[in-house]
Length: 116
Image 1 (cartoon, rainbow, N blue to C red):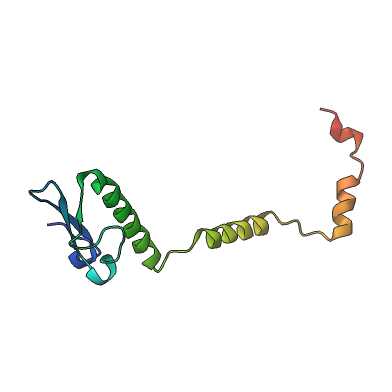
Image 2 (cartoon, helix red, strand yellow):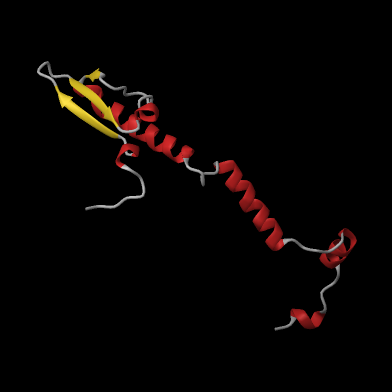
């Protein structure tokens, strides 16, 4: 028996039933209130073989995005980027006053430090 952190109702499942007409009926199972509107596929929708692959792929991508956005630990890329930039700035910040900084930039280097 497999144990998972989420219950079976939280796992969205897409059932594809072939029809005698050559079309396919889509059945969605899972947290129906959330998963039912993971467009482009909708429960009980009938699609052609030609469009089936694309529609299933887009539905799975949308379901994964929705699941990630509902996560408590998710932070958008712009927030993570801002945190990383702040972290780098704090790590490499030069704690000199402006005049001291320019003085250290333009002061002459001693000849002894230039010789190997």
